[in-house]
Length: 76
Image (cartoon, rainbow, N blue to C red):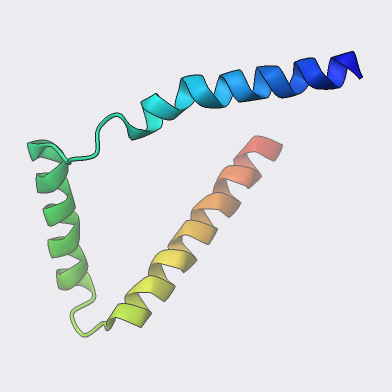
């Protein structure tokens, strides 16, 4: 029982200490905005007639492919 309490205390402390790091900067900087704009422009060039649902599906497919590649590399 004592170990369980200690585990929850450690988990709580970790969550409290990492939360500010995840939410510290809510606004994008100039370079982040520029990078996002470049990415959006490239998407418009490479996929000109794509609607929002098609774009979401493509992004999901790309994320799945990337995760599969990383998983494959980690197994090797």
